[in-house]
Image (cartoon, rainbow, N blue to C red; front, side, top):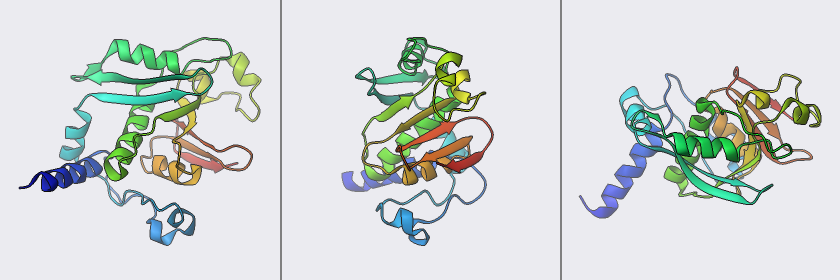
Length: 207
């Protein structure tokens, strides 16, 4: 096997193994004119249990950028089957309420969702741009002052994040995140351009 063959095999393994489930994934790009214009495909099937387990057994890292503060860090939050505490706490700090400079514990399931999404983009398309965090944890005061925010927003519980991957449309990114069926996905494509992701119940909306 040549080096090129090994690289192709590795990429195929990664794209198969990142998302685990039992049924077919979201719509094929060719059948959706909005996504067809992006030039990117969505995953077409879920990984089986063994390949998914192999991927998730690896160290879990996130590449995050916070425009509000200028922070850009690559952090490992999970290693050897448990939380990597230094990296996890640093991520919690990056996802803090920047208006009140207050951090909270962030749900690891949310970090796993971001990890799966960004790792799939890297494996499938070589996209390594950081995930740009617009909003993470919010205090009750900040949430009340945020236009359009739900009173019991998952942001106040450390279970939601708003953001984007530079170069990707919110329509595509939101549909990609939705394939994980990990919680709610909000498409903010009118006045603002970002995607809301949370690990509450599965639901979708467009604003």
